[in-house]
Image 1 (cartoon, rainbow, N blue to C red):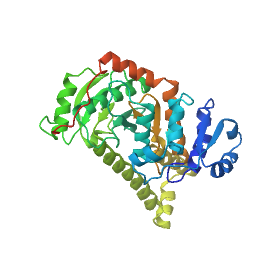
Image 2 (image 1 turned 120 degrees about the vertical axis):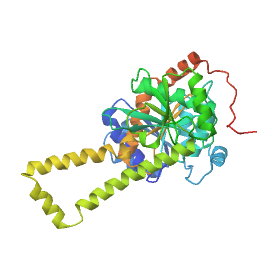
Image 3 (image 1 turned 90 degrees about the vertical axis):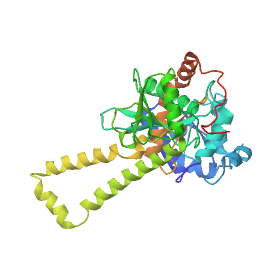
Image 4 (image 1 turned 60 degrees about the vertical axis):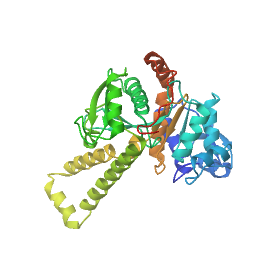
Length: 351
């Protein structure tokens, strides 16, 4: 029931996801009166989808603590609990991010050696078939250098196991590449990264304009910076698409001129498909599905404003991680690196 256009996008997303993951089965929580007619719209969906009714839901305005206290029978909490009980392999939600993180941390618990789960996503780059893991995207506004180190380990395993990077290149997001640049948190984290054992190689700082160059496999930052960066990128992508459409539709002379520039209708078709491919590459829906890393169960956060296509891609992320037994591999790596038993770190500058 979470998301700007829920529950329509959730049901449609499940239907679309079946094409790529025909073996997937779904448990969907929410208001039966709203959900049942939507499920019936898609032939065969009811045969792979179990509907569990609950009138309670977490709204976009609920504070995490409030949702945790009063949302025990909400669709979000019951879906998370299904993973905790072993009834489901993963949970996908487009709802309130803060509430999802609080509930997931409470119900699923964090892995040994991890104190704060982080939200990670796949960022496209200019290198074909290469993406960068970018984290944290908003789960932790204030962090310590040890928190960032934990994020780096989680991101490194993510890159290695999911995207098959043998030795992921791990960087810290900063305002410059020089050693003296950045605040105390970034400087302290850099020193910690240089001394730590990582599932990859620490390569120093990455600037904001380098996130999509393909020069890095994992880029780590605090949740406040990561969330602002991500939203800025999404807004820029939407602006580019809007400006392109506006330019091509600005007048009939532009359209006529485009036709005169082409030798034939096949040429027009080539231009159309090239623009469509470009539009898809910068469309946030096709990169939707951020993983809450560091939990003992799989939890995927979909963008709240997405549509059925975007939600289907979030389901795809969840299914891929479940099939690859990602959680087991992260726990094995944490034990190997000796993260178990580490005390709760304090943010730099805390008393």
